[in-house]
Image (cartoon, rainbow, N blue to C red; front, top):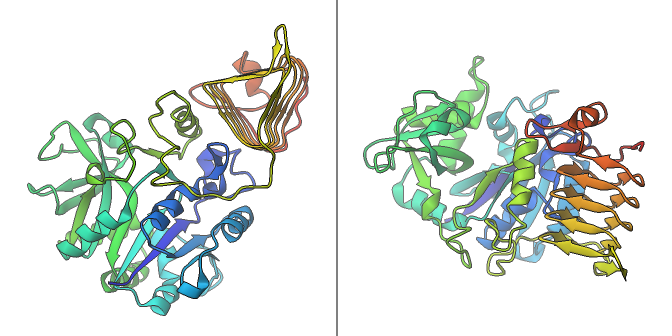
Length: 408
């Protein structure tokens, strides 16, 4: 069976502003050294699906550059990860939705002539062996298989909810954020939440996309239009993410999946990384998360003079970081970050080349690239004052955009 993978990476990411002010959502840095897109591409590569097209659209320069520099596969063996920007092949317009993005790029499918097409989103944090989902899909004979994660019934109004027949496999309804969802046959207190990952029988996908393209009332969305169309035809099945077994996973991190579509979710996902026994373990070398690395020196911790001691506790510290008599607590420090003497960073995410001045304190913050925190500054202490200068999330996390200039 020939299988082709398509990654949808064209979303605007408005809810992650200001982190998406000048980059596509899948290009947003994560976990110190990664980009969001690295997680889905690593899952596909580890699963030996090595013909991958990445559909991009908004602010795609840094995303295209990252893919081109990092994801170089062997052309001799016919493997590739190729970013494909919106080409306006059907006229001068952008993608109208995820289904339209596929429809406008069907030429890529025709070029490969696969039996099945994997269509995954680009902005979730998780590990998954896609082979197991594809195997179920092929064995079932379904036109589409939708990956789902179990969530409490009370959260149904936050997800696209999948309802099934009594077997728990055949999908009978696919509804967006319902308030009257029905629990699962084997667990009435849970629902299936769509993960935005699909496997299609190729010809069925093509036919559905063509039909949808002719419907002027459609929003041309996979979850909103294509999947319900296939559900109505009785040809859609669900794949239960809890059945996915990733080599090297533990009971603690098995089944982890985080949608980082909001700033608070993005922040919380980082906090999941830094405990002694993290709920999402970056250190699983049997299912690595791949990314590109700049030629940076090792991290350095200097000074041991009274209270002027370079330290990091319960933190992730990347290459090129210098903690010069400062302190990082429960934080993620990306490459090139510098903490000067008596600086303190707590419960925060600092992206590349952030500089924290002498005596400055940063608490519960996300600080994007190239920001300089002045000497003695206080971030995260007075949220009303912070709101006048920066974004502050519903949960009280201060977010400072890329290259912002901060007055003390």
